[in-house]
Length: 485
Image (tube, rainbow, N blue to C red):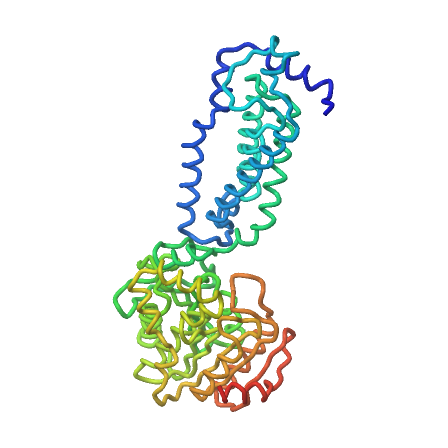
């Protein structure tokens, strides 16, 4: 293979610099053993961040960058990219067979050999490739760290030239191989890097999670309330009419993300109360229980709204999103007196059955293994619909999306039949995720309007609502199939 003329001259120029201080630095940068504690610390830091799931953030550029990645997937990318680049270099070295400058007969007498090497082949530089892989994955995952990561990779490459064991072309090619390998690996895993993963999900039941959206601002007013089991909490209230909508968020949401549905209810003339839940925001209980214990939080808010704020429970509606819908069903069934209605959006009737539908049986088994035993048992016996088996005047509405694997339309129709309620099916919608911009305002406005009409006494068949808010009867054929099941 023909090598460019400048390759040797640049090598001799860099290698010819004589400095004991520079030699010490370059030897440190080139010694793999020195990088082991640094990389171990980096991985441990990522695992520490992994206690919290990836989430959207409204903070600084640094905060947003570190909040949106699953650190465990980033570690996986680092390992695969580095191993891939190392293997590519290994095979290319044996195929090309270029001698290291310190072993090249025509130039070795001019080389200041300052390092130790294993093997006599030079092209390409595996040190450069591996450092570039680490740097490029880091830069893609956490852009604010890019300058620092690339500086370290550049120093590693320059150290190989300065120590007399690689030519500049070897280093440049190594950098190219490393970045190309890192890019390919990242393109494969980048979507996974924005998801919490199983470990991140189970940590919701073990560690306090960060606040993923800002607390409601004015005109929302903070209100101190006490859960039914004695915890001091802070909910948020927005005055409107004499009717009250109590809004309960889901497991992957928080009190700030419920401002959107709160505004929809406010436009319909309701006063609105956003319920704080344990395991979220600044609740004194740091971890979530998935619904069973959170019922105490909702019950405390309802008690405060009636006794201290004067709202009539017969004019109170509970809207629950996902886990919040399950909590609402439990509390409605345990109340001594009926409320006007419960709207359960994307409700699961059994947590682990919904998990199997969403993730499959294997991942659900792993999920159970990593959950605390008390939480696992509580969710195993938590069947929200069982609480509303007694005759109640409360009217129940179930909202399901056609793309929702946790609470598909069949689930909504079945629960509606079991509780003499109404099923509302959202065309093209997935599981409720109010913190994202994936929901259609016209569709939700029309859906909530139909739900309130039913709660206030207007009987109707199950309905379907498209993305533009157009309402039609839900297909009777699917209802019949669901009934046969």
